[in-house]
Length: 592
Image (tube, rainbow, N blue to C red; front, side, top):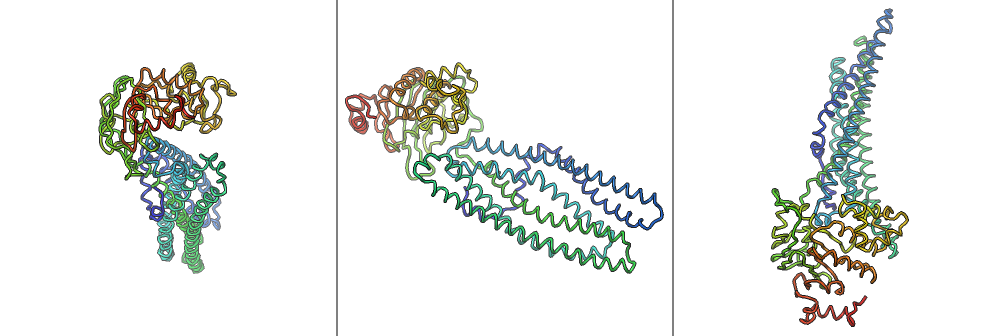
């Protein structure tokens, strides 16, 4: 999703419109913020009028009038302070609320995306968008937009009051405007591109860091630290180079704009000072004009600087909206059918063909047809790449068939809500997933409402209770990120306990005992056999010793069914299964 072509795109401020769905529920807070903003801008514009009165009454002998003008100036200053504080509180709170909603929406969206989505984008980049990009959006909603609107009001209001103060001087000031706008337009376009490029490099850097840190033991085992560090450094340096160019461009634009604005103002004030000497305007009027000139010039300078922030936020908003609007290849139907109660567990594959999107020329499954009865245990065996694990992924509807259909209790999976039929399935994956939580919570992941006794019962059934009890805090022991405190076999037993606790009518075991020693495998196999007694069970295995008791064994080869039968039948038939059995068995004992 992130590539050189994407980085070259010129992004528009209009992409900030993607924030409106998140701002809309908070219209009242927006309106209150706008009122506070208008109040502070109006008070700021009134202040120079009070200053003019004060200056023009310096020479007056009326002390009471002078006191009134000073008092009015103090009241105006107090209103400005209160209004500014109120605006800050409302706008900042609005920004935090909107960004929190965006983070929740993006996370909820990507969490439900099918695996094909993650073939095209690194999880680290997704995390970068949820964190770094939303931080940019926060700076815009919580600060930049408010400051920009305030400066726009001050610019137009100040310009109008400048015109009332002195039309001649105001006309001279307006001659400067084209010179100021030109660099903003030219450099602003370049700044948009650089901002998007910078954010993409940051995201790629985050993605690489996430990938390498997630496999830190493999990196260290292969002494790949130096190469990995060099690769990360290269991406980080590209991010820095992009940021350096962006900063230089923005600094140049700011310098040009500020110099042109203030140089013009100084020139105009020189003419104004001559008018005062000639008696064509009062000192107070000139001071008022000076203050308005500084306010207008300051607002232009601020807007030129805020423009860069808006450019960056526009790119960040677009990247976030991309995640919210990305089309998933696997979708729930508009009006899904439902599975009432507990499924019986019959499964059907009807002329199913499938090619992985990343390998469209290689069929993962080819015209596969198979019916599995409720309560039946069916094992899938075959060489690596034969399509065994693909069967599991298709049954979970991580992908849809390119042809044919898959059914549960006779109902096409594509007519059901994914969350509905997945509740009927328990999975033990080949690579067990252990979360950074306690052993108790890792097992309870299978059924969040399970009691502690239910969790312990599932652990005993999976032969996990004994080793969990030996942990420092027993079931409450924190097992570390990805279960780093556990061995491979212990992770797998926790994953099996999780599936047992789920108590689903369909059980999927993808190399569920591959990381167990002989004793643990025997204990877990007994638990799995007991668990499978009243459930439809699909077992994917390389070690044929674990599937000899299956009701049927399906031999897979190059995405097709090469044979079906019991262990004895398939050995007697010869062919692929017989060759695999000959390789793995010696005197009836599975080779380790």
